[in-house]
Length: 146
View 1 (cartoon, rainbow, N blue to C red):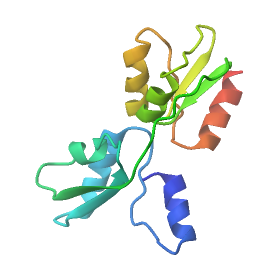
View 2 (cartoon, helix red, strand yellow):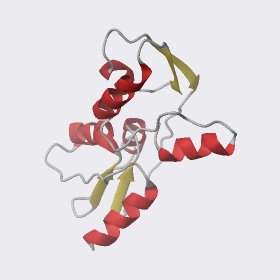
View 3 (cartoon, one colour):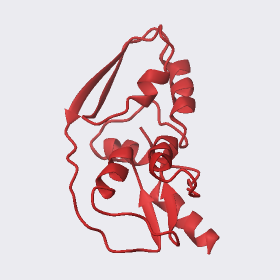
């Protein structure tokens, strides 16, 4: 989980012991595995989860996945924009059901997994990734790029 999910949990009285840092799930898995030792871990996730962190954990860690909500892709034609911001592979997939990114647009991806999904469609395109998975980081990066 990232800082935004941690904040939402804290608003409900749950204080996470670990918050992933950055957009690299493999690094988050390494950081997390150093904290959990021999404990079994449950990953409540989306029905469309790529299970990237679970799959990057060492094989001796007992990790369990459970889908706790379903994502639905919505097909909708999107008007042309100057900046496109994708937050997940399913976000990329849903967007491309009826829309495409013009050559002149700037493209942002939250994390390496979302970047990979975009590269499958736009292999030659420059795709920017903010340092952290926060909207505020994206806003700062866009402002610096101007």
